[in-house]
Length: 53
Image 1: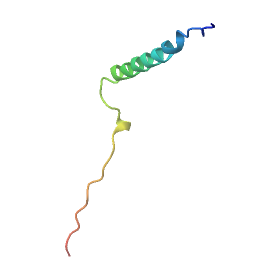
Image 2 (image 1 turned 45 degrees about the horizontal axis):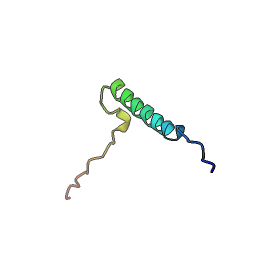
Image 3 (image 1 turned 135 degrees about the vertical axis):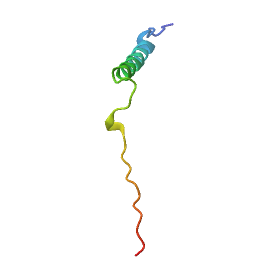
């Protein structure tokens, strides 16, 4: 009976990619000091009240 070759790298590659992504996110958070950037802020205009006239 012929057995297929074991693919040991099948799980290692995605796992390494996930760990690199987590390390990158942590590096960005440390570099920015944990504060959100100004580009992430959303400006919401205040509703203007109409004067009765």
